Image 1 (cartoon, rainbow, N blue to C red):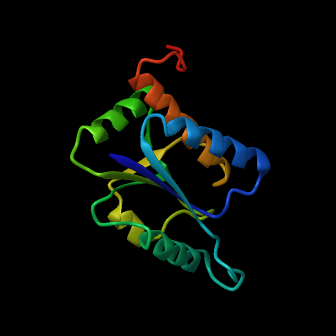
Image 2: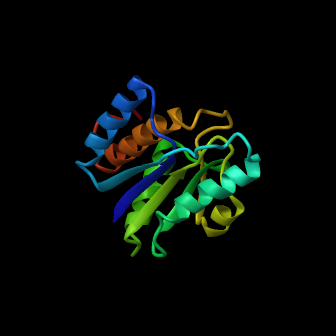
Length: 157
């Protein structure tokens, strides 16, 4: 299985770029991983939030293949502990899917079309985080999940 992460917008803050890079490199030890940043829309001042979500949704859909299992990071999704998340990853690896794709949307969330395609909604917290910061939080949890699965001492029980 491969993991693909799609995020709307570039990671702009230096400290976030560094953190994302560190965790992507750590994850390569465990799994084939791809991180795709889709540039934010240009000229979005004149469009509604709904239109922005639709346009971003089309950009995301263009990066997907029909065989991928799609997980949207969404505040309305299911909450996992770190151990439960590692178990979820293991369950996905035990299936015949070739690619598990996580999507981090823009500031207004996802289009209806993406919600219709999703297989799983995943939430990190009831709190709201910037779509820039959640990249780092997500990658750290993904790394933590693999260390749990491999019984490595990174996660403290």
